[in-house]
Length: 390
Image (cartoon, rainbow, N blue to C red; front, side, top):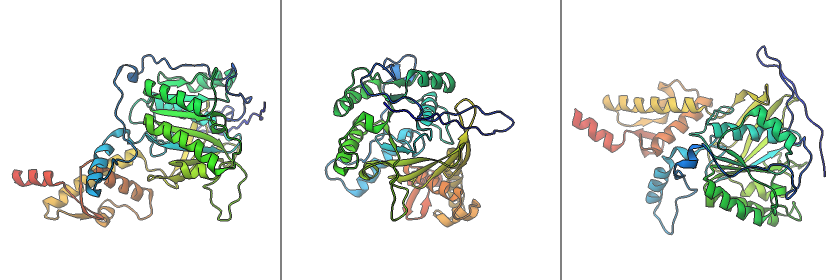
């Protein structure tokens, strides 16, 4: 059994004293199967998902057999109209595996308990807001009752946030099969497994083949349940000749390769932390969120390169109105550079990134058509209605 010292950090927020902020790696190490740790739940009670039928979620990929590229595009556009294509921005998505790598004592579990609470409560967290109340299942293998009691009483509890009962659990494939049943029966949107090496141990964590077996099991859980699966892993002392931050995680590099998204949580100072997306199959690659400890195990957002969802939504409206206005003036097609000029967006700015996401969303949801690369117009149906009205 191992333990690490309590990492206490203080900072100053606007005219408010700050309490100590313990890290994730401060508790006695608990092994699966002991009568300790998380001893809660899957029963539901009062959460919308308990009584409502499960929502259909977007699958990863739209392919069955042989399909033309045009037909595949239409299928994917249809699936991407579902607001559930994102859970916590692009960082946690349905049917995907997010590998969450953190330094020792950086505060991984406190962070993820906060994330679970906010997702289940439908609240914004560090600039990203879930599309609805999420059902979250937490497989917490290391935290004991003292830490869980402190976190739940301070961060808060939510109807849709459950903990997996660890009594008499066999790590590895047996646990993964149990999780498949529980996640599907409970209609969970998010599964957080903390940590990876305790949930699915291997003889040699440096062996890429064994790491592939681990990640394949988590990917199978995500694909079969359509839940966003977050797997927690500790950092190592890796030295890369290329200076890449991608392989911060301890052991085999194939864990990052097999993940859909990989996020590093690192320490900037005693009170500040940095989230970096180092691998992604979507649009959030290299995005960063910098934050500091706040009161009552909370966080204060300091800086984020992730486009605000509010800004993206505003630009969705503005780009549609601009295309509509241009069409009325006899210019039915609008180039991307025109959006940049008329909406006063600077090249290389955060608003430029938000513009691209807004245009992509408008195209995928059918609000705008895209006759050629970098060119947008009103859909044919809208043009027909405009013509008939004239």
